[in-house]
Length: 455
View 1 (cartoon, rainbow, N blue to C red):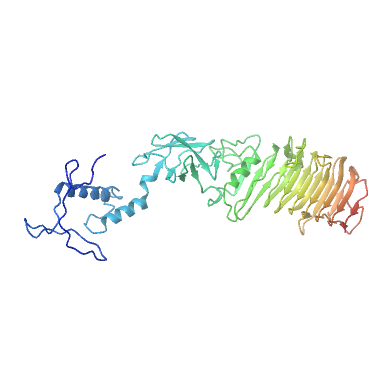
View 2: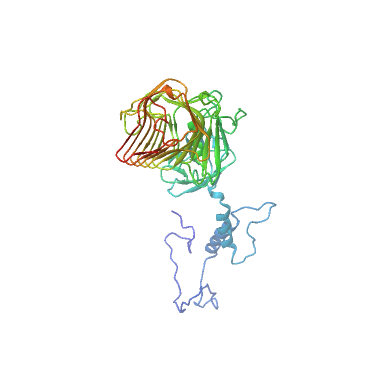
């Protein structure tokens, strides 16, 4: 250890202070010269020590370099404010915490100046991104070793880092956290594109229906929704345009901030855009989503309470909308809305495939359960068509204070559906077109019981 600001120049040396005759007031005190060469009424300081102190202050004041054009950042005018201004400019300019990302797209390397001596919890850095990431990311500062970069506790997903952006990071003792993702950032685009044939979830950013550099469609609907969920929509409605093809099951993540997400397939020919699940639910909705123009189908139920297996499932509150939907073969039911959720239908509703009972023994085409409601979008024309012979437990079921209000403007090929017309029980309500007990499709009579009302 070195004595960098000591008052003497020998190891272990001490200085002797004159006897104290001053009294301390409320304001600053200062050095005083001796009144003569033999008086002991002032301060005797070695020039070397004073020069060292001068050097420290000069380095601090000049350490910020020069402004554009060569002028000094801090005016060297010997004012009392020079050191304060130097510190303020140091904080304001943030140069010791700034670095430009080098290395590779997913293994970033940056050099801070002065070099970082260690990783310390609470350490803040700002890194200029030069390449888009294609998978999870690490950051290595000044050769201290790569540390994971996470966004709100999760590893970065392809495309989270965009060239030319500055990413603020805070080290938590194990990872660099990017806490602005999904909280303060508005959406990069308000329209995204998905194409199973030409898209990529790792190479493109979803911003274009055709490929040009990094711009191009995603390959999966899920990838598009996950990217959008990373932003605060701040009142925007973001649209996802999906090309014809077969896509995997969709689990809609929570929408951040005010706004909504509209996913559009082919409203005129929904069978061309298929959401298919090998097991479990095909389309697991969340509040503030609209899906328009898709066929949904599920091959086998997940025999458990977490996901009994449906074509479309909305659970746990909130409102979502679907329209121009073609229900293919679905295990466990075509559409189920549960636990205070609200699902609205619009356009042409098609049933082209039947249902097989799930773990609960039910295979209703439409079910509202426990304070939930399924209804038609107010003021819209909604039609129902059963295009093929299908077998279900029944067409519509409302149970436990639920409401199913489905006065379709027209129903085509009602005789193609084998199963009970309706069941309404436990203080629930089913609304038909004028109360006719034969309004809904099905071969078996409807049942009202235990406070259930059919109107």
